[in-house]
Amino acid sequence: MDFRLTDEQVARRKEIYKVCEELDKKKPKSWLGFESPFDNEEGWAFHRYCAKEFAKRGWLALSWPKEYGGTGTMMDKVLLAEARGYYDLPGSDIFGISMLAPTLIAAGSEELKKEFLPKIANAEIMFCELWSEPNAGSDLAALTASAIKKGDEFIVNGQKTWNTGAHYADWAFGVYKSDPNAKKHHNLTFILCDMKSKGITVKGIPYMNGAHVYNEVYLDDVHMPAKYVVGQENEGWAVVNVLAGFERSNIDMVMGLVRGVEDLVKFCNENKRDGKPLAHDPMIRNKIADLAASVEAVRTLAYRVADQQNRNEMGLMDAAAVKIFASELLEKFGQISTDILGPYGQVKQSKFAKLNGTAEYNYQACFVPIVSMGTNEIQRNIIAWYGLGLPRMK
Image 1 (cartoon, helix red, strand yellow):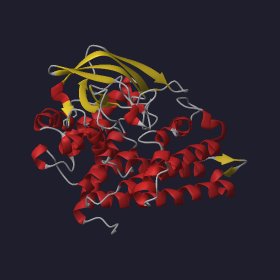
Image 2: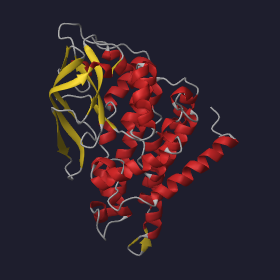
Image 3: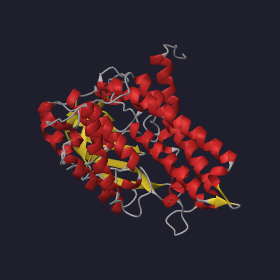
Image 4: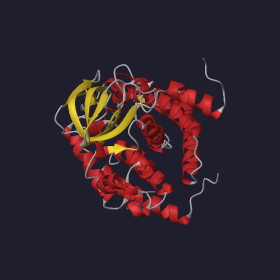
């Protein structure tokens, strides 16, 4: 691929970076990382503020078809993700923008497109995902939450878990067993629901550091109108596969690593140990050099996937490779940065905290990308089966 941007793309990139740089100055003091929008009211308010700023520029509908309010190109979307990642900014609803919107465009009825796409593009509503269950995670088709049709609605009962941001979301998309007698993969229905519906109970699952990102969602006789079914009744698995196909380059995660390495280098140049800058320690220099080289490698892969997306040629294997590389590198970065900071790596939200306490936060949160968005074990299976053509074990 040609890694050079066109003159138009360079100008667009400067515009996007300028906006994101200004938003970066308005971050709340409690902001500590990519999951901060869900941890407290202040973070959620900042997330929605950024979303409104992007929406008024048409940036939440980048690469959509023009008939649905789309603006710009897929590369513009990549450039926005890049800038957001570098400045650690929220504002793009991963569930509404990255997952549901392209799924509605591909598989939703015209009525659903007209009702939801403008609201998503204008940052009027935010979504969460009612997906995994206590006994159905990697094998999602084994879920048991039921949706029994009665007239023009479904009565839904069951439990969902690991629901990011469900305590703040306005709406949700989920998949439920709608035909107990049908064959697996032909017994599920994909439905949108208002999170204020009667019968929905949200309970937080706190991290060991007290952060509230994940939730359990209980559904007790929740009435979901049949008009909110995406795709066909009992064929929700096909919609799940459509949604899963909208993989991303993960450029936002990669650019977060780029900024993280820059900040770590700055810290090592400005802080001393035994009278000498940390940057003079050969072991520290070696660790940071290894990190920097790995970050540049995964950055190149991410741009390759972005280029494939721009040409509608991306395969699942390519996105899986970037996801594995970036998430495991994020874990490595969390460990190394905490180690270099020493005792300061255990401090956050204090006058003694270095790097705004992000080292401690990253160390505790770095496991999340390895598990979420499809565990890395699943991603390796995707590479083996769809990329290398290896047989499945029987």
